[in-house]
Image (cartoon, rainbow, N blue to C red):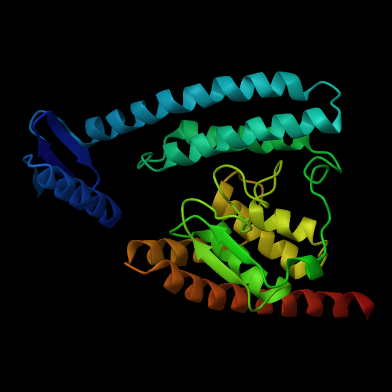
Length: 294
């Protein structure tokens, strides 16, 4: 385990590279504020077994998952009723908020609390209950590629899977000369995407931003939608899709974030990654269609 001693107590995290990096940043921040911080790696704590330490982490995660359980129960009671498209979209929005909370819990659920697996299962069940042919697309207006030429696009800094795949999609299918800017706030006339609030394109219902773009620009190619499912699962982690590519792509993206790449470097790497993945999926899809015609 790793430990950091602060004036207000001792904080512990598992002895993993990503945890060590978090502690290093915390220690640096504390010292910059003229505080005292001691970072160390220990094998065990006197008077406590490793199992007891792990149980403390799991108890914390269980308590947080319990709050999600309560929210899911409320949505399940609503979902068993006959719902209009408008109400389904409303509940999908509430479900997305719960999923974002789950992602935050996962950051510190280091020892895979059993409650976490149950949450994923309940999310998948709830998603099926809320499913409808127009549940995710009812509010997505169709747009023309011609209307989005020579534009400036913007999104949040430190792009991850959804924003990187969107950047690739914009340059690949909409405007190869598009300007993409990474900032916290948009300027007048810019097309915001995957913003925390506002923006032209973002999460809609059960769709991540990449899927929203596919629906808005009315692209139906199977390879693009499978790529969307891969992006969806890495971004939302809701258990809807289980493609084998998900684990590998997720690990690559996590590795990039651990490095000190600029936003532009992340984008360049992302363009290459998603272009290669799309080409492979396109070939796979084309081969499948050829087999069907025989």
